Structure formats: structure tokens, C-alpha cells
Image (cartoon, rainbow, N blue to C red; front, side):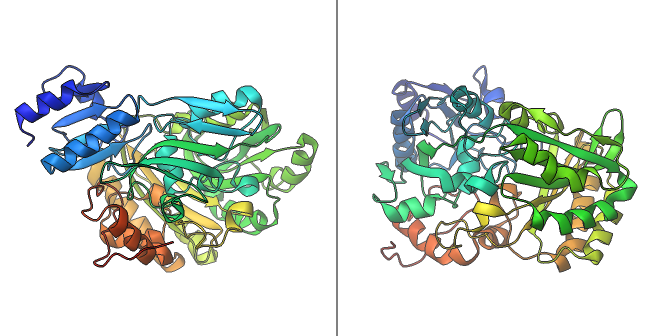
Length: 456
């Protein structure tokens, strides 16, 4: 526990809000959208700027305090909240400036995807981020950032130009392709392991008009739709991003959907999507032109805050007939109507980056399994977690070991290590250089290598 005298002095030195357990607003400040997370920090600091972040890091070092860092979003694994330590909350840091001439945006880490998009779309510009508007840009980007534009423009981290970061010794560093290049490499894919990012500069693009939606099939059509998706997805152009998912619509019940988003020439969109829109006997076809910001919030209704959430995810090694059989079997027995399960298709520009160019290594497997289990009521946790694990275990013969870190639940060191793949050892050396005491360990952690060497 933190000494009261030191705590009071520290609180008075900050510009941002602070919350202790007896303070009004404390419970709200420690709550994240995943209702399975119920941790109680000794102090929450809602930073107003980089100076508060630096002060927090230095205070944590002085007090040998456990540190967690929260950005602006949903924190599926709950790593942003600690028990009995210092929670550094960046959610109030929402500054953004768009440079129209350079087609760049400088953004602070408390922004959500929707807030970022609203500002950049004022100039008809965008960059790859996620697919749910309440997602925080910083955690998403530092973990990779799959999104609706990745086929044309790469992942979110592929569009980073500049990062300001507070390291574990309380210094502020700038990381770019020419300055602190080892740190720039490592930040792009290592999550929060190497420091607290206080500013991100992104490259922006003009994606053009959007044609998006999905084709909804009866759940009993899962195998046929999954087979079509597997064979069709590798033929699509970069401008189209697709995924298959089982989800529940109020008027239709549980369905299996092939969703997609095309940006660019709308006449070309109709042509490209024709094979999908003429396949099978769908319940509904909801493809339509829409504003980009509407696309980015299209899945929001399926991810409201306050539900219990448990996620398993790995890239497919093979999506064959046997895998489709398993998917079909488990979707038919899903215990919660709120669960969102299926596969994303990764392709295009995001997969043309060599696996060692950034810390994020997963550039070659086109399909990514997601079992995003959601339910209401703690009394239903056991059966939903068991179903999720049983589903995942049954899928293991068709999956590679590695996974996309942004979808990891709190699964321990082995899963964390696998998510960094072949880049893990280099990241461990960087960890030893920039965070040798593992101050930033409330994440999918990379322990420091035992002997640090300069890494470039």
C-alpha cells in the first residue's frame, strides 16, 4: 500500500484528477467494459498531459508501486487495472491535430477510434484503426491494429510516423524511423511493454466512398458459408476487407454472416461483391453505401460495456472441411446469444510487410479465429468460459500457436510469448534496455532478457 503522506503530496503535484478508494468517482474510474474485471488500485491518476505521466512513473519508482496503464478503450484482458497499485489513466488525453498539407494526424492516447475518425473525416481522411468505435487508439495501435482499411494501407502500426513515450526511468523520448530506431521498432507491436506512449503521429489517406454491410444466413448454413468465404476471400482486391461471424440480430435470432467493407469506386464495389451477394439463400443482404464513420461503428451494438467477456483467438494454419465441421458444431451449442465468433481475413498491404520489420510478427496467415464470448451475470461465467475453452481446444489442430495480442485474455506467459512469435527474443533485449526492472508488467508481458545488449 502507498504511504498516506507521500500519496497526498503526490496528488497535490498533479494537474489531472486523482481517485482513492474512498473518493467519489473511484468506482467509475476503475471500471472497464469487461465486467469480469474487478480490481481496486490504491490510486488512480487521470493524467491531463505528459507531465502527469512522467510524474506518475517517477512516483511509482520511488514507492516501488505496481503500475497499470489505461488508454481510452475497452481493455479486454483487464490489464489496465491493478490491485493495490497505481493506475495511470490516459483517457482524458484526447488532443488531436490534423495536418491537411502533410496528410498526418498527431493524436493523444486517450482518444477512441470514433473520436479520431470524426476529426480526420472532417477532411475526408482516415487511417487504419479497428472496427468498434469505442476502442482506444493507443492500445489498439501498439498491439497492431487490424481494421477496415488494412488491405490497402496496412495495419494501424504500419501507419505510425512518430511516437512520444515515457520510459521506465521517467524520461520522455521520441521514437521515429530515424530517432531511437530500436524503440520505434519495438513499440510497434509490443503493447505497453516498453513505455507509456503520450502522443502518436499517423499517416492519413483518402479512402473514398464506402460500400459495406453483410449477407446474413441461417445458422444451419454455417459450413457452406464458411467454405465459400475460405475460397472467395483470397481472390478479393485490397480495397475489400471481410470477416465471417456468428451473432444475434433482434428480429432474426442467431445468424451466420459474411461481412465486408469496400472503399473506393462504388461501381467496382458492386462487381467485386457480386459473388458473395449471389451465393446461397440469405435471410438478408444489408450491403449499402455508408459514411466511413458509420462503417467504423457498424459493430458497436454487439459490444456494449458491462458484459462478462472472455476471448480466445489464434491464426488458422488451415481452414479445411474438418475445421468447418468443428465451427458448425460449437456455434450450434453456444450458451450465450451475445457471443461473437468467427474469423477475420487478413490480406493485402498488411501481409506484405516482412515479419521482422516491426515487432508485430503475424503477416502470413490469412485467417484469424475469434471466439469473443460475452454474457450477462456472473452465475453464467462457468458454462460460457468452459464452452469457449472447449471450442478453442477442439480447433487447436487447425491453428498455429501464435495469436493477435489485442485479442488475448489474461492467459499467462506462454500465450504472451507465443503472440510475439519470432520477435520475442529481440523484444526481451529491448525490454532489458528500456525497462530492466519490468515496471510495465501489467500487459501481455515480456520479461527483460537477463543480459541486455544494444539492439538496433
